[in-house]
Length: 345
Ligand code: 1DF
Ligand code: MN
Image 1: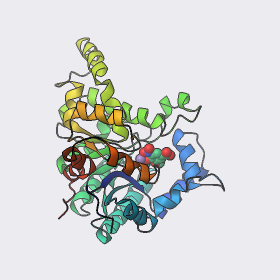
Image 2 (image 1 turned 90 degrees about the vertical axis):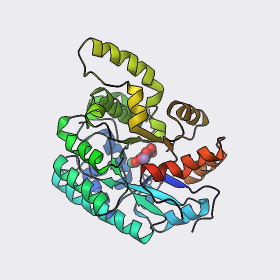
Image 3 (image 1 turned 180 degrees about the vertical axis):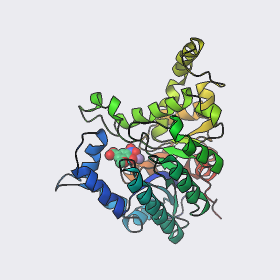
Image 4 (image 1 turned 180 degrees about the horizontal axis):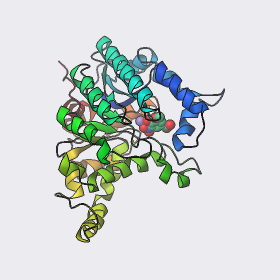
């Protein structure tokens, strides 16, 4: 049991894996290709001595050992777990569909053993959108999971593509939030990210996801699916900082008749359809901007375990200068509402 903090602490972007997925990713790692994701996949899943420097795989596969101890030590009440990036999105459709069901089952079992410590997001295999929608339904209705996770593009395609609409339809109909988590920039945008180690969490991940979200907004997805709810990590991947400019330029493009006409402003969709988390972005200034731009109900605390160290994530949120009312929202109340997590008794 965690030491009881002043605030219940629910961390909302916490990664795990299962041996079968790790094994399949090892197969991908040993295969051909040079996509950005392969860099990470080779480092984590086919680690040569000295390559898995951060021992990520150990942390990902361990749900009930060291993870819970660290949570206890820091007073972290709950991890909202999700199958780690790239999920099953680098496999063929059949392998992905099969493995994702196993990962969701395993997640539900861990939650059943630790219902106050874990909640979880259902993954799905976008490679087969109709089966994905079925798995999403199973994830919510049978496994009682709390929302959905997708790792941005699939084979360099984005969810605004009509072939993926069954997934968005399912998320909307099931009334659960879809977390768009990073993976490496898709092949068409990868080249300039290959130098200076900017391909991953430092820069490439955020631009990949922000681009995905911009596509959803300007394609008119939120007019077609007005109740679709999206969650972005890493302080919204900075997207809300750019909404003024996106609006100005998109409006000009709309006037020219070359892009879909939107019913609302991009910022209105962002405020209506999006929430963000603080994963890996422990910046007072960025949090202050986010609270002002979006309001206190739209920001959720996260760690990004095991990729980010947990102690500073807790220490930072503990020290953030906001009212207790807002800190309750950041630390747990927004997560409870957005991800349908039962409030503490
Ligand atoms: C990293 C970062 C890896 C994040 C992740 O999953 C991830 C990393 C593979 O630093 O290698 O989820 N992140 O969300 O920032
Ligand atoms: Mn992450």
